[in-house]
Length: 370
Image (cartoon, rainbow, N blue to C red; front, side, top):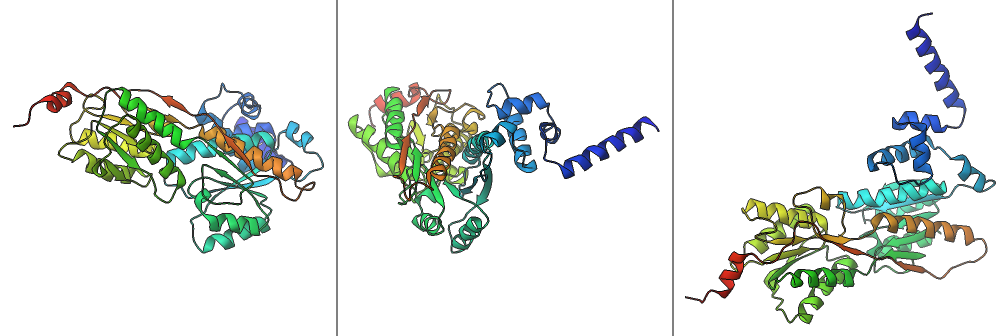
């Protein structure tokens, strides 16, 4: 038998074994195109693995339904917890961070994770009911779903466990993981003012989300504390999307007396503001400062890299998975636990998109009117 024929035969034998037996760590490594050692590092939560490789491994684990032996031992005799991560968020960069946190924690705990698009509509009730009927016990609700009372009511009526990620207005969840949105926006605005800016534009997020209002209020409070004017023309409405950020930035930069700085409610809109500034031949940050919010991958992949608020999105999602697991474990003993609220720390990350007002702007401000 020739060498190629032996290779084909061996592969067929491996395929037959995989078909009739539980997947192994070698199967995961083959699927993820990496070494078994790398798979082991991901399973054990080690940090010395590139994000791209980690995502490949986690995706392979989910696809093959691989259960690490240590997790199987810890859950011996118990049913596997199944969680659905529902999403209806226009920011791909935010969702990417969100998904990574959920996948990592679900893999570590041997929780089956389903990722499901859930547009707020009449069909969502039937979809949630079908998910519960299919064995889903818990639901993670990122914005804007954590703001929608109807979705939360549907989950509660179906007997599901719901945890919100963010300061949603919907009531009745089993827990929430969030940051202090108001204080974070206040701190960023105060930072911009500290650079010497007085005329600051603000791009608001989706008006239907609680976080948008809290970030706007933080901005207003910091401006009022500094006794700086907040004119209506310096506040532009966005939707947390890149496109809406372009429209809002065009409005702000088109003003006769344009702002010297723009603070956008998320990184997508801030990146759009940078692009619009470049389109108008303005240098960032020498001609205009631009700052964002969230610190998604986009913030450090554009030029200049964004000064932004780092929201620990991965950790927030991981904590949401942990909350659901805790409620699930204690459910047989108690009918209803008090809702847990966990506020995680944020951090202002300064990069290359902010600076003091340019000399040209300062000269125009000081020049006498003709």
